Each structure stands twice: as C-alpha cells, then as structure tokens.
Image (tube, rainbow, N blue to C red; front, side):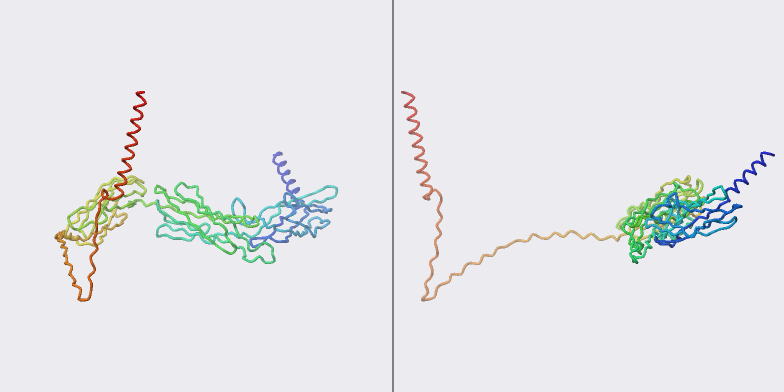
Length: 459
C-alpha cells in the first residue's frame, strides 16, 4: 500500500513539474502557403505558484538555421503565476522547403526544429520546449486516376474500391499528373513559372495476386500543365477471393529543389463465383473453307475452372446454326484453377452457301447449369469454277518478198551504174604477203645461226 502511495506521489510531482511552464508549438504556413516571409505566434503559460522572471526564447534543433530567419517579438520580461503571454515569431519559408512528408507523401506541416523558453522562479530556473512546424503548398498533384478492366471503368480517388473483379482480369490504369505552379512568376519571387524536370509515377502492392509494371516517368512538366502515363495490371488467374491494396504515388522536386507529390490508396476486390468455367481460347482451323468439296473444320476450345471448387461434370458445347451443327462434350473433370482443351470436327458440305458463320461456344457445370459463352467466326468461300486450259494454235509466220520494180529512166535521164562490191580474203591481201616475207627472213637467220654453231663445234 505504501509503495502505491509513493508511486502516485511521484507521478503527481512529475505532472506538476512538467506543467509548471508550458509552451505551445508555433506553426508557420499552411496547405496554400507560398514559400515567402511568414509570421506566426505561440503562447507561454506560467503554471508556477510564483512569478516567472528573466524570460528568454531561443531556437535550436535546426530552427536556428539562417534560411528560416526566425525572430521573436513581444517576449515578456516576466509572467505572474498562472498568467500567459503570446509571442510573435517572424520567419521565412525557404524555396526548397518540402510540400509533403518524404516518407508518406502526405501534405502536412513538417518539423524544422524547436524553441526553448527559459526563466527564473525565485532562485530556481525553469524551462520548456516545443517543436517548430512549417508547411508550404504542395504543387504536384494527381489530377485523375482511372482504371479500366474489361467493360468496367472507374475513376479512383483515395480510399476507393473497385468491386467485382475476377481472376485473370487484364486492367489498364491511367494516371494524370498536374503541376499547379502559376505560369507567371510575379515579383520575381521564384514561386511561379516553376517546372519539374522529372516526375516519378509508381504503383505498389504487397499482394502476389496482381502483376504490374511501374509507369514511365514524366519529363519536363511545366507550370500550369499536366501529362498522363498508363500501365497494365493483370489479376492472377489463381487469385483468391479478397481485397488487394494498391498504392499510386507521384513525386518530384521542383526547380528550387522542393519535394512535392501525392499518394492514393485504392482497393481491388476480387470475387470468385462458386462455379465459373471460363472460355480462354477458341481456335477454328481452317478459319476459311471452300464449298467446292465436302470437308471438316476443327474447332478447339480451351476452358479454365475459375470457380471456388473442383468440378467433375463440366460440359462444353459447340454449335454452328448455319450448318445445323451442334455437339456437346460432357463429364469433363476440371480441378480449381486447372484448364483443358476439347476439339470438335464440324462438317462442311459442298452445297452450303458461302458467307461468314458464327460459331457459338457454351460451358456448363453439373452438366446442364450454364456458366459462360463465347463465339468465333467461320468463313465459307464460294467455289470458283476453274477455267479449261486453252491451247492456242501454232501460228505460221510467212515472209512476203516484194520484188523490186525496175525503173527505166526516161529519155534524157542517165541511169546510175550500180556499185560493185568486191570481197577479198586475207591471204590475197598485201598484209599477208608482207607477213610471209618477214617470216622467211627470220627462218633464214635461224638456219645461218645453226650452221655457224655446228662449224665451231667441229673445230
């Protein structure tokens, strides 16, 4: 019992000691505050039972930095017991002061340091401290976010939910970002005509049930301008029932180095049906057939069980109304998240009319209960008659020679004599004679040289 009483007494003494001098926290700026000179106030309260004298105020913990230029006025010299006083603080929000918290991208007042108030109560000293807060406008915002999943389209604000999504959904997320700086820098204060060299746009989720890539960055976003990026999001075909949390963030530093940005959190709600036999793919081969002769077209269907349980009586039906064809395959066993393919041979008669025909596919669970449907197209081509080969007769080419008419000159005209054309061979030409003479001389020289050599050898 004594220990409890002593503990309560200590708590009371600590409370009295802590509340003897109180200092409120000064906050500069706000959500729309430009980065300029500002003013705010804070309150000093003397909870002592005696007068607080020799009161002094100082800045520390970073607030003393000259870029903030803090100056205190109306500081009282003393405060009576139980009295309060309001102190004015002048300062400057620097151009590089963040508009958002770096960790959360939430626009809020940020701590830049602290102030300390000291004084004397009789022969004892007393002091108290408080945080100095500062906030400047955040100029980089998500103007619009929109998600499209098949036939579902929805704008997204912070906290929104996208409902009734299914496994294997393919979605597109578009994010539009705006720079809210004024395009005019009035009075050359560097608070207008400010751009962002790079804006990072990201999405993030801790869930393994979705796949995505970060969108591209936005470059050179000018004042009073906006731009958009998009990315694809795919819900895994094996995704379970539940809610997927998705964060959308944009951030960037302006020309002055200040951080700006925004974060939105949305929820993607995935809901599986108890029975859900999805048609994943339809192949028609060949896609076009001729009605020249009777033939078969193969229709292959791939189905996936996206329901909540295994199925042992899945049915797939294919029908082509224009061909009066219908066939159903029953008793297909298909476990949850498994897929399989079935094939159908569709006969095409040679008397069928040409055109585009619809191929209808339906899936069932428990043999008869409808699940999903889809369709494809089959083109029937008209049979074109092949023309008989035409053999052209051989054409005889006849050359007609027209005899030259002899023209008898009239009296008083002289008839020009025809020129004689003389044909000579090379052996009867002068060049041939000259060549023979040269060869004869060369042969004679060779004979003389041989004779001389033989005579010299005998000697």
